[in-house]
Image 1 (cartoon, protein in one colour):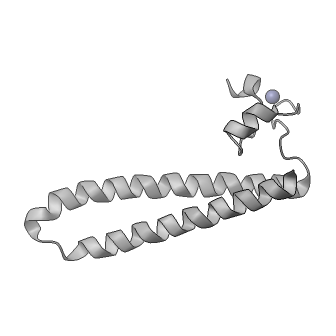
Image 2: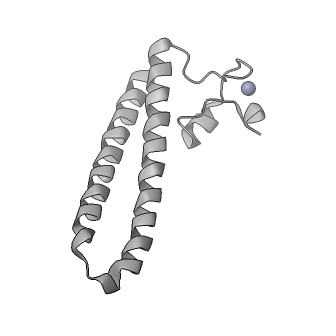
Length: 103
Ligand SMILES: [Zn+2]
């Protein structure tokens, strides 16, 4: 199960990195806009920034999860040491705490 999940996480990281690359191309493409369009461009930049930070956070969580798999402690709550429920991991594959500790 773990190997399959690792592949899945790695693929997700690659997809997120591609998305970040696309965001950067959007940034570069928006630079030659007219002055009149600047305000709209700036709002757009903020949205792109937010999307990029979200993607980076997710990449971080996924690579942490992969590290934990390699160390053999994936799916173990970092607070109480109990196993994180399978259902919880399916919803939130990068969860590092069991549902009790996360609340
Ligand atoms: Zn816990």
